[in-house]
Image (cartoon, rainbow, N blue to C red; front, side, top):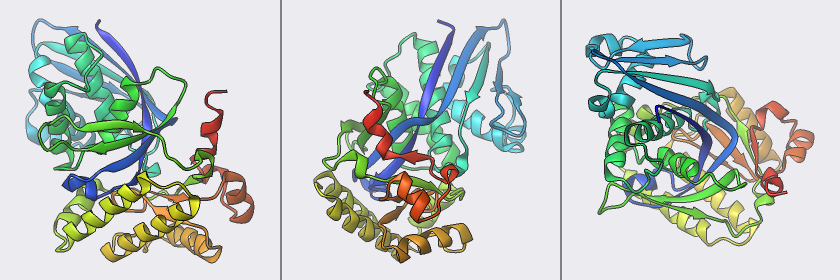
Length: 336
């Protein structure tokens, strides 16, 4: 095997953000309504090494560098900085190799659905398969060491839940269920995290939609701000408790209540992007109509999770189709 193809789904964390940084659980969903299609091809060279990346995901559609380039050259270009740090844990395997990566399909970072983590997940899984000729990676210590190091190189830390659930989704992509729920928790005794499939007890068709805000949250900055918050442990524990409550919920009324509680915590953390006009316009609409919603992402503005179906969002709230990138009501049609 010298070439692999992977399809990496979008992701969203429903509950447990920030708590997951301190050993708490997170509940996330992965969905192939938006995805990255990535191919990796490796070729042996007599000497030197070359990394070539082709994609219209970037302003410069062709990126090229060597694992031997100095750090100054890599840091001058943000795209080269990202990929060189992603690949760095694998450098010893790429000596005297040409690695070609082509991103054939992608989605915008402004959706808040894990575009960076999709690249980390897809390229890490692809390299593992090329190097070890083995598709299975979720139970491999060396694989997770490299993944965690890539995350550390790129953003300086984080729980890694996003990369983990996207990896779980692509390794377990043998069913017709293109939307899956996951429980993630870092393991105190192993670098291999705990990742389990999960099915909410609430009717999935009543879980509403994700609404686009077109706000890009810088995860590195968001994590840095949180780590310097004097009340970070209090906030983390509060998010973890809400996540545990969600796992046992059976009614939509209870879900509405914990979404409200989650929003109150985000307000206390002062992380809502209230300076953004579109964000403010959206929450004004939902507040005026008493529609339950929850802010999402590291900066809590990447998107909004709203407990209303697509039809009502368009007719009652005048939300355009293009601003509703995902609706849970589509899950019921996946196995038909």
